Amino acid sequence: MALWRLRAGATGAVQRVSGDAIERELATFIVSPAAAVHVTFEDTPSPAARDVLAAVARAGTRVTWTGASLTPLAISAERMREPSAPVIIAAASGGQVELRDGIAVLDTLRADAGATLEARSPAGTLGARAGHSHAAVAVGAPVALKPVLVLGRASWESKFTVAALEEAGWAVEVRLAVAPGADVTQGRLGTLDTSRYAAVVALDSALGPAGAGIVRFVRHGGGLVLLGGAGSAPAVRIIAPARPGPRRMPLVRSLGGPLPWDALPLYPLESVRLDAVRLAMRGAGVAAAARREGAGRVVQVGYDETWRWRMQGGDDAVAAHRAWWSRLVGSVAASPQPDGTEWGSAEGAPLARLVDALGPSSPAPADGKPPNHLPPWLLPATLAVLLAEWTSRRLRGAR
Amino acid sequence: MSDFTFCTVQYESGDWDSAPLVPANLIDSVARYTAIRVAPSGVTVPLASRDLFRYPLAYLTGHLPVRFTDLERRILHEFCERGGLLFVDDHNHDVDGLFHKTATEELARATGAFVELPNSHALYSCFFRFDDGPPTTSHELNGWGDNLVHKHLRASLHGDRIAVLYSNKDYSSEWGYHPDNKRFLSVDNTKFGVNIVVYALTR
Image (tube, rainbow over all chains, first blue to last red; front, side, top):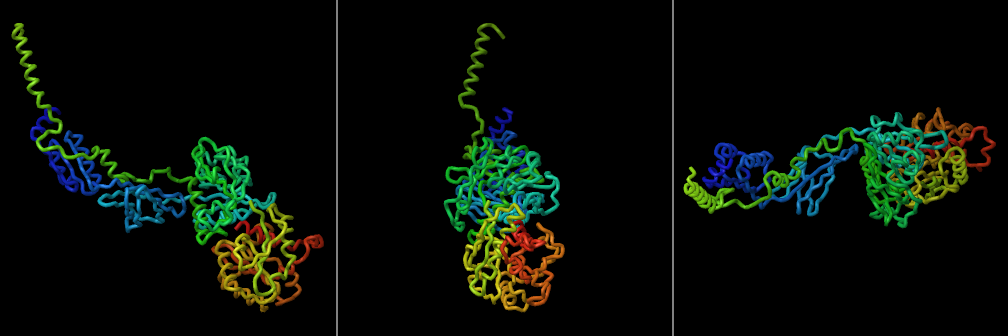
């Protein structure tokens, strides 16, 4: 290797290549490798070009690159577990970024500190472009979700929760207590199992006969939403992220404002478990928290009477209430596929991949100077040492 | 969880307060037969007020012609769009009467066309069972009003949910008595009213 390097270095050649010519130069790289290659990228290199350069570098050629016009662009996408299967696209570029799917431009956003966009039904690969840089991620196909089971008492909350979920496309089965021994049911109400249900929504402490199976359901991968005071029900207390405190009436009366949450009654979440994540606060109190339990997830929301938001909120309240409920259930719903398996994010951050493969950008080495050249004093010094050794041996009579 | 509060709608035209005993009677029945938390007194809310949105089940009745104002029509439309249910009963029990013609016309303008509600609808089985559909009233059986026994209720639907439930059967007369007098009935005739409340709270 050292001889090859010396030989190559002796040629003193630094091959200068444009980024878009790398794949064409592949044969040259193999047949007559240069001591060094310097690539100037005007555009984001393709994965193939990057892999060629990485291979050349591993074969001993010093590879350097510059790309003044490249932007540190990154994109990621996550399909939400909701019936409409929207995709949340996140991009960061330090500036303006254009997001598109396989058909058309979706939007152009300022992404100085990152930006997100929700796309209802994007087609094909999702891409982002900022200046001369582009990144792309593949979007997996939507998966069919199992029904949701709603438990509680007959109330306005139950009516409007079921309505919101159904309007969002969820299949909803229901057991609502009306009187002792008398429930209103909807759907076939099978065994509480992840093969039948994606999630359970507990609206209050009236969980009925299904309550006994909720803990097992969650530990096997099911989702659980606990609303208001439902977290105090004995059947779910041991897996709840927190304990609901005494119910507090809101200080704000208008549900038409920008923060409808502040106008809803709240069971502040107390004694939040160490393994729970706080999701929302009202003042100093915790309004929502979530945790994992076995293979499943539990989210607990202290707000009560969310139906008032839908009935008394602003013009978009019905849609907002529907979307909120759908996303809340989707955040815990059991998914037929493990998270992340459907996402091809290989080119989500191409500049980072380039740095990972070739190191950071650096100026081209000067022509004629081998990349790993020996110091100029080394050869005379070596000869002097050898001469001294020979002289010493001759003087001592050694051969 | 808030209590269920029975709401009577007050509108500009006609005699909206023609059945003042119905709310207390139905509140009594809901409390008597179910575990639903119910406010002991009902409320009266103007149809032109957005306060109506605090009460997703509302009751409207009368004998006289009904003409909604523009604001009343808008509020009613929005009430149903948001998911509220308006129960309208023709206190006149008269198909060709002025209430029926004008009320159905106004309601259709505000909330959409009416359809005949099948007697297999969940409304008739969600709590008490009414295998033959809406229970008859003494006014129907006695031949008062239009001299008809109406076999179906009608409804304006929002998706598959009832937005407006319309009755020609004159439940307003049938249920218009003091709750204590239920003891004189062999069969409590307000049970169907309980079904309306349970349906509204669960669908």
